[in-house]
Length: 212
Image (cartoon, rainbow, N blue to C red; front, side, top):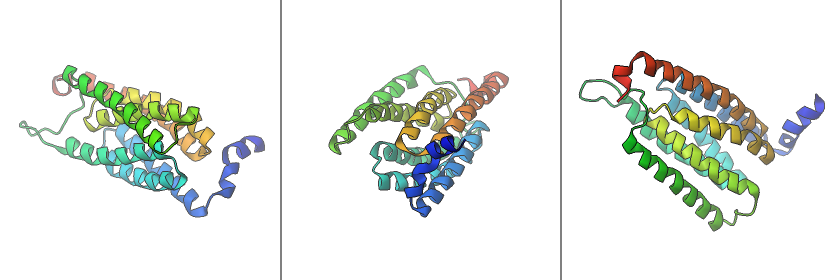
């Protein structure tokens, strides 16, 4: 048991206390944000903004440019999603849960490919394209960018992207030495699975309202 504990948390002995507290705080708000997303609650965005703001600071300090970019994008898309989720249409209805439209798939593909190119360019610019984790970072960034865009637009497919990205991120953050964040992604995975199932129930229950 002690060996497992050392493997997961020994690296924190060299971290500043403030950074450990900040990471733990970001994890708590990150978990709360995903839980609220599962519940289809607007609070997903303010809680997520708190978590991502902390991560932007920490990741920039630790030199993890790709991860910092992900969280910066999360923050911006949280502002956008907050607006979309509360926007009222001509029928005085807020934006409902829906499946992605055929016309939106082209934007999704462009976003995914554009994210790959953008993150690759950033890593090359900073001279960070020198490890296998850089390749995985690039792919997960594109996955999360796409998932966040879908969530902001209240599309059920966002959960599929989160599940895939979360599973990849669990060992990735262990390798990077951030066990608390790795555990967070493990929990994220289970919440995302339940989130997909709950949103699907809503789609099945109100097809006339949420399918369009």
